[in-house]
Figure (cartoon, rainbow, N blue to C red):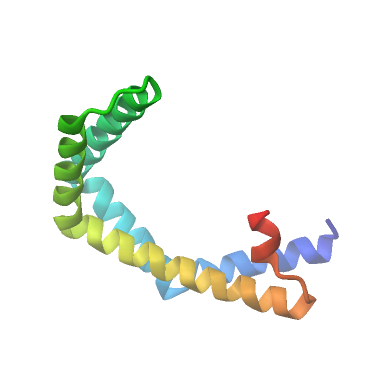
Length: 117
C-alpha cells in the first residue's frame, strides 16, 4: 500500500473514532460488559445454543432446549444495556456503510457487492 494512502486511511480511522456514533457505541459496549446479569444471560445463551446445534447435527431436535433459548433471548431483549448496545451498534454500522458507499461511488466499484461474493 502506498504510504500516502495508508496515511489517509489512518486519518479516516482517526476521524471515525471522533464520531458521536462511535463514542456512543463504546459507552454502550462498556455498559453491556458491566451488566453482570446480561453477561450471564449471554454466556447461558451461547452454551445452550452450542448444545442445540450439537443435537441438531446428530439429528435430534430438543424442544425444551429451544424453549430455554427463547426464554433467554426474551430476557436479553428486555435488558436496557442490550437494547442500547444494539441500537448504538446499528447506528455505527449505518454510518460506516455510508462511508463505504461514498468510497464505492467515488471509485466506481460497489465494494459491498464485491465483499458479499
